[in-house]
Figure (cartoon, rainbow, N blue to C red):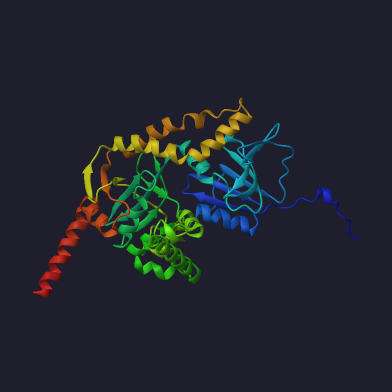
Length: 400
C-alpha cells in the first residue's frame, strides 16, 4: 500500500524553451504554451539553442498574473502599484506583463500572462542586453555578395530593406534585416532572421514573389487598388463630394497600410547564411531624396556612426516612453545604463566601423530595385563588376 503524497509537496518540473542569440545572450522561456512559443518565435526567428550558465533574459509565462489595484498611466497602457510596474498593452491588445526597467541590461526576469500577441519591447531589451556586452545593435540590413560583407543602414524608410531586396535578385546571401549586431572589434555582423515585410510596390519589383500571396491577400490587394482608383477618378465636387466618397477618401490611407505581406527570408533569398553572420567589409548609408537621381559618394565611417546614433534614439522612442513612465512610478529606480546608452552606442559604433569602407547612397523613393543595384554594384565589389563585364563580353561574343 503506497502512501499518498500531499499536493503541497509535489514538485513539478518546469517546461522551458531556450534561445541562444549567437552565443552572446541566452533567453529562456519558462512554462510557455504552444501559442506563447509561436509568438516569441515570430520575434526572434529560428534562434533556438542551448547555452551554458544562466540566461540573461528569463520570460516566465503564467496563466493568471495578479496585478492588484493599479495607478494607470497613458490611457491604461501601463500601470503600477506599490512594488511593481506593468505593461498593459501588446500589439494593440490588452496584456499583463511585469517588467522591472531598473534591471534591464543585466540579468532580467519578465513575467507575462499567457496569450500575448508579442512580448512587449523584447527586441529593445535584447539590444540593451547586448550593448552591455559591448555589442551594438544597428538598425540595418546585411548580406554577402561575391564574398563581400555589406551593411546597409539609414533612417527609417530610407531604403535599407530595398537595397537588401535589390541584391537578393542577383544572388546575394541573406544575413539579416531590421537589426544587425556588431561587436566592438567589428570582426563580425549578426542578424536575426525575422520575416521581411514586402509592400505592394516591392512586389512590382519582385514579380516572382507574387505567387507567394494567398488568395485572401490577392483579393484584399485587388479590392484596395480598386477603391483607390475609384476615389481618384471622381471629382472633388458634385457627386464626388457626397459623404460616402468623402469617407472613402479619408479611409484610403488606412486601407493602403494593408498593402503588405510578411515572408520568411528563405522564401525571398536563394541562399541564407547558415549562421546568419558574416564578416562586415563595407557600410552603405541610404538616403532618400526628392529628385530622381541615384548617386554614391565615399564618406567617413565615423560620420556614419554619428548619424546612426540619432537613428537608434528614434527607433527607441516607444521603449523610452515606457521607461519614462517607469521613472514616474518609481523615481528612485533610475537605470544608469539606459540613461547612458547613446554615449556607449556611439563609442562602440565608432570602434566597430573603423577601417570599414563607407558610402552614402542617394536615391528617390519609391525606387527602382534594378537602378539601385546598378548604382551600388561598383562600390560593393570590384570582383562583381568584373564578373558582370566578362559575362556581357561573352554574351556579345556568342552573338557575333
